[in-house]
Image (cartoon, rainbow, N blue to C red):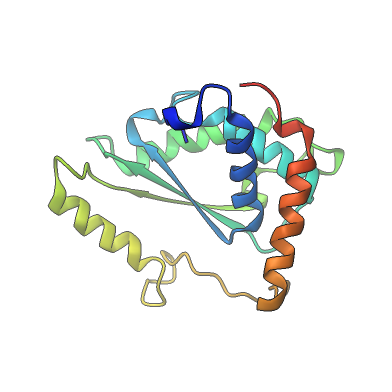
Amino acid sequence: SDGRERGEDDTSFERQSALFALATSDILMINMWAKDVGRETGAGKPLLKTIFQVNLKLFQPTSGAKKTVLMFVFRDRTKTPLEKLKETWEADLDEMWAGLAKPAAYEASRLQDFFDLQYAALSNYEDRPEDFAAESIVLRKRFTRDAPEDESLLRDGGAGKLPGQALALSMVKVWEVIKENKDLNLPA
């Protein structure tokens, strides 16, 4: 969220809400401009680095357990093929992960130990509305049981799934832990 309504120095809430989304989601969709792949701030790398680092510290995920899907959606796709965008972005993510200050238990970990990285690219809505609509339908289908297994974003609940009545309490507790954490209150 980089709108003028938020103000210049209100990045604490941005970090807190991003970490909350990461900590409570099975699928986290990250919308970014295709032209920002390879950029530092434009691609949101400082925010991602902060929430990855604090997530490891606060929530101590288990390697190999149910992975959160990080769905990167590259908007306003250019002539650059999706495979090239993925390759560049994954190199940036690996470099970012290697540079994190990690708890000792996670020193040798890789980003892919905790997250399933998925990708999609969408054309510009104003310049190519028909392509955007068709690509959006393909992306939406990945959230259904009709999607091919290798493209589906749905995961079986399995062990560790919260019963519905515990979800609200769990989210309240996660938010309390995040609000109390001082690592997210750093100036921009």
